[in-house]
Image (cartoon, rainbow, N blue to C red; front, side, top):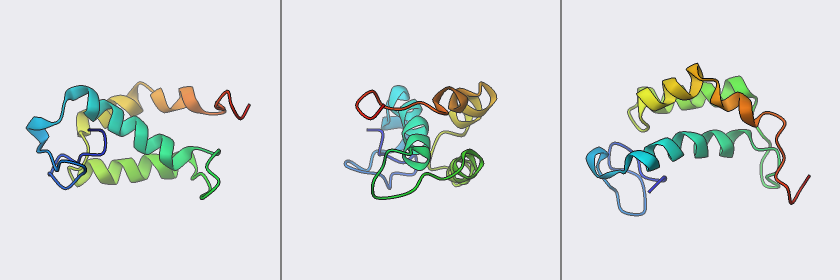
Length: 91
């Protein structure tokens, strides 16, 4: 369910905000950040941290992701815990 959007336009089930589990809403923020900032993706370059956070902010402002969880992600500096991290298979 972490590909669902709060406005019901996500996939695979087009769930409404109320139907999306809280855990999935949390995972969505992390998943989008990871997809934007991961350097181990052969099909695209990672974007800088600030750009990734700007994109997430736009998603929150458009009410596609949970704004309060995005704010927590930023205020708790959760994103900093991934800087320089490499997947064990590629390290």
